[in-house]
Image (tube, rainbow, N blue to C red; front, side):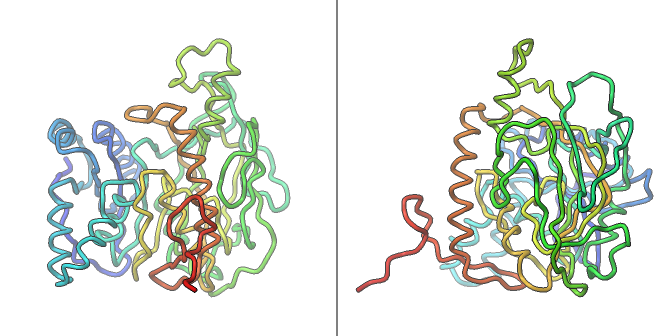
Length: 391
């Protein structure tokens, strides 16, 4: 039976392993914990499991007792509203400068990125593997695998839910991350494809915005140099289920299915045909919902935003010399919980705002280093991204 103490800052040793679940839907987390805990147990792993809860105090009070009833092999730690408030107060005291209180509160404010910034602080000094609350430790794979083309590292297509033609397949997720995180590219196993950047046949390279609804897509590695001494600081598994389905694609899937009545019920599932691991200099396909990070030295913060592009900062940060990103030899499944999600129309609007901001942010990048990334951007959407110079 796992324990659910409030998580404190751990006394960490080099390469400690943490599995974190950032959430604002505490109701769903118990099932996620049980699935991953059992998966780790069967594969011989015992990471520290931490839930980072961004729920309201009312929701926390309602659902935390249910979470305590979750049965696990490993201890599970909990960081909720009270623990977060205690941590930020402690951090402000250590900084000893009231002028920095606003910065601290902004970095850790309730948001997708703010919640993930807590994961960076609590796992500092170790390796962190993260999964969203609607992920599961298996993948949907077609019954008969197809060979990949030269340079192709993944292929998948849509299947009607409940039909034959695909099965669930489980992979050693933690083992796959341990193969790459914190290691040099030259140490990667021989089955890793290597190159400059990943290309997706169905998405824009720099924003991950859809190019139009398609029933099949592939990921390819564009040839180019990736230094053998570059360190893999971030990695991710492949993903099935609802694999990066944009709100526009989601709406089109619903409208083209004459027998579908409820738009919240997606009857099309993304099924993997085949995949192979890859390591690249750039990775615009970064997916923080199934990601792992080498946090032994520290990492830059996520964008503290509610607009679902909190991980975009890492797609820019990883471009610097000496750092690489990897897709590991494993896959997971996304179940797309519609509980507490915005309406589709709102999601479409938010995605368009995100695409605009991503381009503005990328164009105004001025520096990166081991722990930070800098921009010359005032945040306005009606400007060219740079403040006017006086005179």
